[in-house]
Length: 125
Ligand SMILES: [Zn+2]
Image (cartoon, rainbow, N blue to C red; front, top):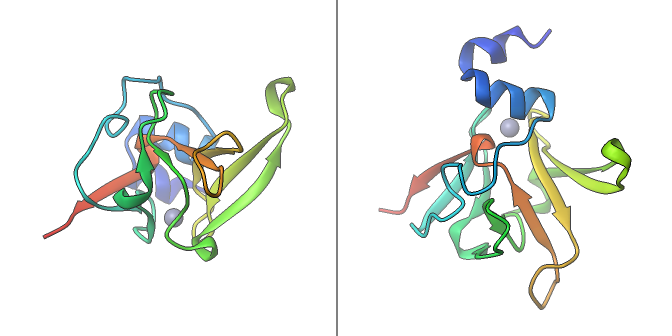
C-alpha cells in the first residue's frame, strides 16, 4: 500500500514519485535554481544531490553530474515508451527521481535528469 504517500505528498508529487510520472520541462521548481544547498528526497528526506554537482543542461529539468552518494540511488533499466533508459530511484524509499543519461559533461559524462517534484532543497547556511 502506498497510501501514506498520498497523504504526505501533493497530487503532482505523488504522480511523479510514486507512479513514475514526469513534470513539464522549464515549468518546474528547480530547473533554473542556482542556490547552493543540498537536494533531499521529497518522500523520505535523505540527501540525494548537492548543488555543487548541478549544471545547466538545457533540458529544462534539474541536472546533476553525480549523486552525493551512489549508496542513496538505485538504477533500474526502464524500457517504457519504446526507449531503453536508466531510471533512478531513491534507494531508501523507492521514490522515482528521473533518469540518468550518458551525455553529461566531463569527466564522468553522466547527466542525472531529475524531477523537481522529487526533490526538496535545503539551502546552505
Ligand atoms: Zn527517498
